[in-house]
Image (cartoon, rainbow, N blue to C red; front, side, top):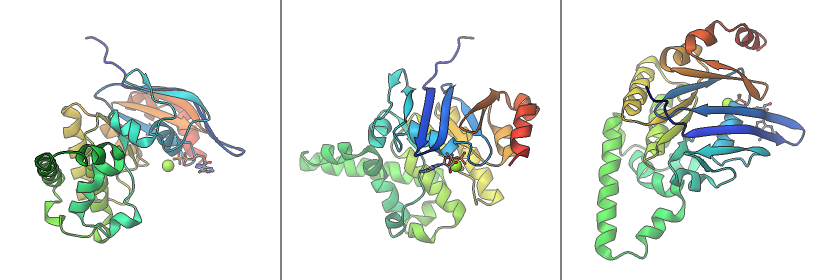
Length: 257
Ligand code: ADP
Ligand code: MG
């Protein structure tokens, strides 16, 4: 078999906040079409790594490559435009909008001005056509995540699990190739958890690439084909789930939590 390409490469990534080193010389890559897990005890630097990859933070040093392009230090919408997104918690102002509105606005919010600009100077027919296309995609997304019955509900009224479905649907509205999920199952009941994981596997079969941070070790071990372990800002180990499960350094790192 030919080796799969590496859409995401993180090289010698470092991020400090004042005197705190959150990420320290982290290097790893994620294979195209894989569901890769990123684990590690609390404070290991997982979220900071996600934020450096997706442009929320500017790395102190090191580089991030997506599909062989250096995307280090680009703005989140520029990175989203290239096909790499992370999920975000539904912000306060979005809670006061309906689920439908949240999805209608998602591409504009995450892709920056690009889409708004493409609508503004257009002829009236183009505008109508684009709105219709967007609306169709929104309904497809609602049905895919089985939240179409909640289209008219305010996002602020959703349960924890329903919110997570909406967060993922919002990220997918940008039509990405790779999605970073930071604890997508936190506060999700077992029924919805299963539904979300099923959706992730389906999307993966369609060719999406996922990097998943999740606290529940069993979820990572049962769903990911490759696991990267971070500890104290750096990569402690990586490999197949069964190797990680029995890795003594990893066990020790978690015992210290
Ligand atoms: P994880 O997601 O693995 O739990 P984080 O990336 O959130 O870890 O945090 C790594 C370390 O960086 C922690 O010590 C945390 O307190 C610190 N940290 C994260 N974000 C900031 C910030 N904005 N300012 C200061 N310290 C931060
Ligand atoms: Mg975190």
